[in-house]
Image (cartoon, rainbow, N blue to C red):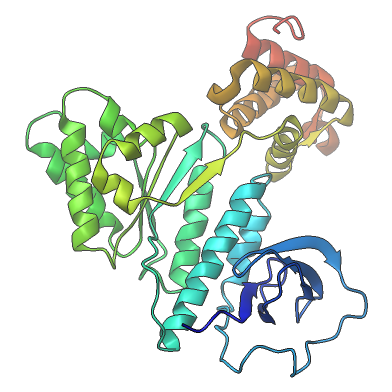
Length: 355
């Protein structure tokens, strides 16, 4: 058996494909941008966060054996940039890049006539509501299509209500409709654990129908299931067919208070509003308290959107008390008073007393 002598890696910053000689704890720069990576083993590298000054391209003597590296599809860079532009999600971004690299290397191995591990493209997303799971599923739908894992870039989103019927024999038909709709792309099932945990047995019929379709159309159907961490662990363990098909987990952490403030700023900017800087400490303190109080039940981005809508409602009520023409600047500005009123509305009592 020939031992592995090289490490293959796609740079997370410029997406250049690198092939380096294997050397545990050795460091090499990306051949395109000079980003410095440290090898941790035969298949792991660490981004040091540094760029080697005056780096040189690897010499022919140090280069890997001649092999045509898999070329990153030119249309993949924009969708990876879209992922990178998402607020927070640091661990998820890393895992998606690792998944993309794995798929590209597997394709390169196939081209070279080498055998491949049977890597499942089905995924489990765990995390609280509003942490970006649906957004990332759509991005993965594009990635899978652009690297040739799926025929189509579509993601069909559904949940228990979209798969389970009220009468015996109807659930299989309803589930099959969702599967047929997603064929060639991705079926994204939110709160998938409810198929197992909620009463009447019709959920089991949906699961059985789904598993059969995943087996019958294994090359033409990808499934992503999502929900709370504990519930999803029980869901996957509830059925050997689920355990054998879903072994890749991506966990979505709650956003931090600072990230939630950034989300609010982005919501405002996207709608031509401007948040007053003086209001940010108030929002930071409120998000910190809600994260502590609600924990895993906190709705993250959904909570931020709900708060934003109450803020612009408060602004509209404030401006409605003015007479005369309103300037563009005043129409855009959301001040501390608007934020305080919104927090009062969302808490049901004056803020900070709503703590």
